Length: 630
Image 1 (cartoon, rainbow, N blue to C red):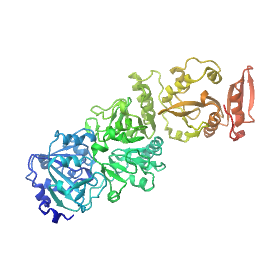
Image 2 (image 1 turned 90 degrees about the horizontal axis):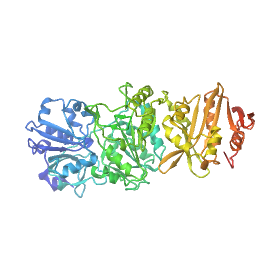
Image 3 (image 1 turned 45 degrees about the vertical axis):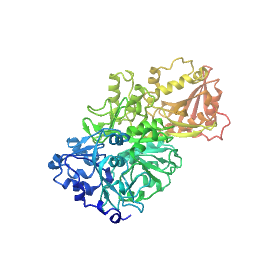
Image 4 (image 1 turned 90 degrees about the vertical axis):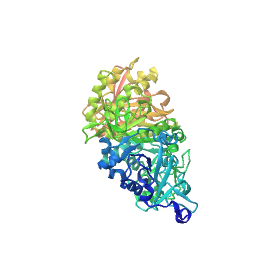
């Protein structure tokens, strides 16, 4: 459609169009990279405009004027999210921040709680039917347009025509300003690629093939995407699309085939990135853009089975409270889409939320895992909303955990130099036992090499990993699930209680080199439970004592045979040359497991009831697939 032929009376210069704005007006501006730069500059340059109240979600162009005192006397900026370019102004009190959930912003316009006189938006040229596209900024822009008394649109040929609910007919727009210019670009930079890489490594362990992902605002969540390139058939339902998605789409990692809501399509609301990204979304059927009241509605989000939300935070306290929008009293970003997707993912069948953050700030001088949130910090995400917290030091699972377990999980993924102090404060506040030992202060990334999986004879997948201090309750539950005979075979006497003191003594402070414990876990109705443990402890410089216990319903499935190989490999790395094991003479099953691996093991009889085996690693053999085991 040719606008000069269809509605020439609506075409204006930018200056003439903004002259319709009167002093005292409430003006809505399109979001982020879709903001109409030409119209914003014309409005600012019109010196007759005074006392203008501006509402916008993400602002860029106004950052060019925010240091001008005359601008601040004429314009009052009210932002729903503070972009990096506006952060300094927020710290200095030059803008006003409106904290609200993204899904609820349109409702503020429709209800009239926030009244709008003018909407300044940017659209693509109309098609032959007279429909323009809101392009990269559908989000709250449609609600802003529909509830403004006058709509002025910058028509820009560089604005992509996006699929979905992004169309606006020319009859819905009062004035057009035809002006071509490059869209605002938003190119995130990663300050520490190694930290992002490590966090991405841990996040990838939580993301299974076929899940649907939401990626939150910020550099880190998008950096994590590149570490998911070994996954299959991922789906996307998210507020924001960035350049980071393109490689995964091109590699057919993001296919959307397994989505339960709008399969085959990426559901999104907003697009911020490079010109390459804008060209990529232009008329691309894989993208389905909808407004924020749809994309961010927790009940809509929950219609995606296996929805995993990945977002970031500024700090997390030891009880699981999360701050995302402020550094103490200084407003830093915004609530944005995090809470919407946290709650949507919690309602999703098989869904959960991940909050990822570096363990430190200010060049490593400040811990982001803190005893309590900073004074003035906003609690955007409550203790009850959190599933997983991830730093470059590991994964903390908080859902369904008590304060004691949360403290241990979070201290474990804090930077090593802050762990002891975190435990000290937690003891003082009675969050944990008064005798609780702090987690190892080593960087335990090397323990990732000790994680593995094994398909058992019953078809289930067992996950093997080192035992951590935060596993205390899970390990106690495992112990109490064992039959008395099994306990007797493992400990040589009938232990009735497996108290905190026993756990502290044996496993709470493992150095993971001289001593090692590997647990086997099985997924059971949405959580993992321990079904076996294998341990070695230093006996001499070149010998370690090894022992195993497997829950009765998982015996004879190859677990002990697998564990002994895993522990042998770890022991070799730590310069051990052999194992010893003391076994009750009547425990022929375990003796058979050891003999199978070490047929030349030396034995000695102790007190007529116990046998000690000495097993040289050089004598180890790889036995054929066994018919029976432990």
